[in-house]
Amino acid sequence: MKSIIKYFLIFMLGFGFSGCDDFLSLVPESNYSAAGFYRTQQDFETAIAAVYASQQDLFTNGWYGWIRVLNGRGDETRANMGYVESISNFTDGDQVPGLTDLWQKFWVMIYRSNMILDKIDDATFTDASMRDCIKGEAYMMRGYAYWNLSWAFGGMPLITKTLSVEETMTTPRSTQAETFALVEEDLKNAYDLLPETWSGTSLGRATKYAAAGILARMLLFQNRFGDAKTYLGAIINSGKYTMAEDYVDCFTDAGDNGPERVWDIQFMGGQLGEGMFVAEFPEGVQTDEYPAFGSSAAMPVADSFVEKYESGDTRKEVAVVNNMIISGMVDPIWRVVKYMHYVNYAPKTNSDWANNIPILRYTDVLMMYAEVLNEESYSGGGEAMDILNSVRRRAGLEPYTSADLPDKTSFRNAIIKERAVEFAFEGLRWYDLLRWGIAGEVMNEFFKSPQQGNGTYFMEDFRTIFAIPSDELTRYNNTAIMWQNPGY
Image (tube, rainbow, N blue to C red; front, side, top):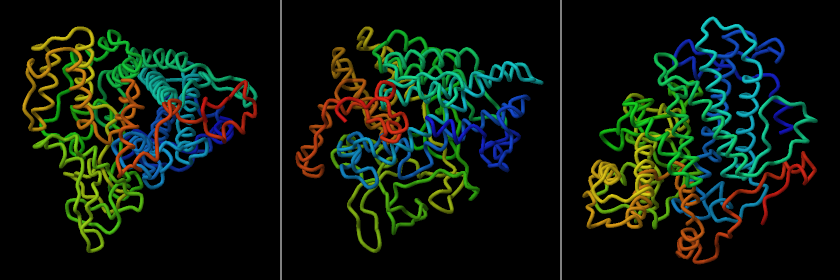
């Protein structure tokens, strides 16, 4: 965090909100100092845009992006996957470039959010309601960053205001539970302050329902089903969201910020440097359907995961493809194409996609709600079964009956199975395996496959969280303040 204090005291990245394009377009570097900048409403609109920009950075690095790292950790992709080999085969330690980079990006979000929260009450606003909205966004983004750091790396130093370097270096790690408590407080503050919707040029900014959904996701991680139900119910009862009619519509540029998307990471095409980067398509392939130009970091999908799709499941052809012609030869390897479906804009390069990346889809809200209902009390013909079957019908599959799922355990197993294919390659599989307490069981069975090393690799119990990056340990040089996670 010393590097964050040092290099981000002055905002080097500013965005305006005067139009949809402006929201994602870099403006000239600012010379504002912290003392002279945080004074007006426009200053804070620029400041919160910089927080969104740091969040977008988590998803733009195709080789080490956040979703890519999480997809590599679970059983969706092959072991020894390029660029994140150690993450995918569970031999990672404290010097993985991708994890170090992501750690720093999350802390940039926290630092920038703290700067806003420290100064916003003393600023001059022409629109009083916008002060609350931006405060809500800052709480949301700080909570989102702490949430991801804590479930992925363990307990964090709880820094909720701007500190000097000396103060930062004497703030010790807290427990994971204590960090979750801060996340809960932040997201509840965000829920209270954020608007239900944004419109016009502000479309895509976080809403109260985005806060509710991320909070529910954290509560499920803690098996707090009743608490999660409250926030999931608020989203459902808002009447603002619906499932996309076709599964592919969940991922096209035409569906950006639509009723299936509770919260999106914003991207735009047009070769403006704000496109979504697709690293999953192999080099040597370019077709009218997938004009991505390819990457050496293309992610190979595990055959065993493809086998999870039932016969006739239309989600399969949306998510993966194989037998493409690569450099004149048929390639049998399955590849991820889930985010490579466009309607309005055909990308010119593999970093020019206009598709947003959904962080939270409405289908996920419904599936979490069905899971909560089942954990509270199984009902063979109830709302939970209706939700599960609505997801299956969209995928072209036969609905379940109470005879198929006669009890809580069988319904839970059906949810586990359905979430795997519905949310494949969306960065949720590893999170799900952890919260269900089956990560070790699933991964060690996965590694028995000849394709995954034939038992060469295995998941040790301590690898439910990543190592603290060695750069951070070196900066602190004090294991009473910043210590390594056990096992690493």
